[in-house]
Length: 438
Image 1: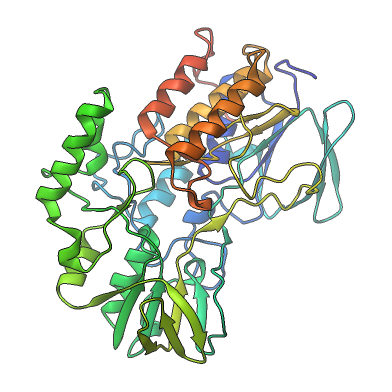
Image 2 (image 1 turned 90 degrees about the horizontal axis):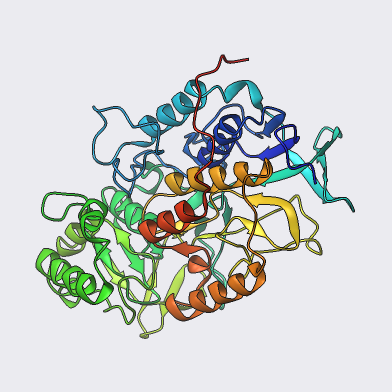
């Protein structure tokens, strides 16, 4: 492998993870790289467009992690941004980042990768949808994992409108309708609240109990509060979390919500204040899991049968690598066999950037993934000799620690993951130097 600053590098995706991959390559002295982006601008899912299914944001989307813990490490958000910026503000932030660090000239917009093939010498043959073929020394995957919808599967057929949350853009089309939202994650709760403002009736179906945390605790975003105590051992920190949540919202039973059977750090929490308000005001109605469909009728596992006009499945996304032959690499199911969520032991010239689902924001972690990958590419960092054993231990930990569901296959705790990545980054890692934009 050509592990030097002269290496030719391909990055797939110019979303938040792709642009920090580019910035960190420039920082490490690698300038022979290209970022392929299938859309016409920087931003990935944060480019709101209600006419296509590309974007995962909808009209009212705001961050679910705080501004403080959603920033790249060396590019703070504007001081006038609120605690939870809107999708418009976030898009401006990402585009400003790409411009500030000189990443834009390296991006080829409206360019999609159709095939990525690993050659015997561990280089990569990249085929674009227009038929053009390029060879690269390294491949960095930054295409995100919130774009390929995962649909639920139930007995029977629903004959009303059935969409995934990825297609949801605004509440107006659901005015006067009976709406059922499947899932109580962040998107499910947001969509339930929004549709309830205009619908005749909105219900939210939950398969299992979930921790729903208000967006402000003691006057601060929960991740800011957690950031002050993350250094404490869990036997001290966890009782504090449970007590704080109890004081903030009371009992889940008072909301008609099923009580979670797992620990608060064993699954992704939902950060939403409005859904708790809407439930107690009779605007959002809680339902258990679905048993079967029959036309427009929905039968729930408790025997209740109700009729709905529209169903919105907020049931998450698949990790998809459509440009790979599945025989080469497929990580759609189970915990991906990656070291630090970045390196695959069988493909030494392949790196993943931002393939995590943190209890916090992805982008600061993507920043560190990219910094580690850039130092690996220039030969300033090597994988440990026992990398396979470490990956095996990581997979075993994931299986024991997190709820067994596809949603948690790339789950990480924000602060511990930052700490472990920083331990890996060499002290000699290049820092940013001001250089002219090409």
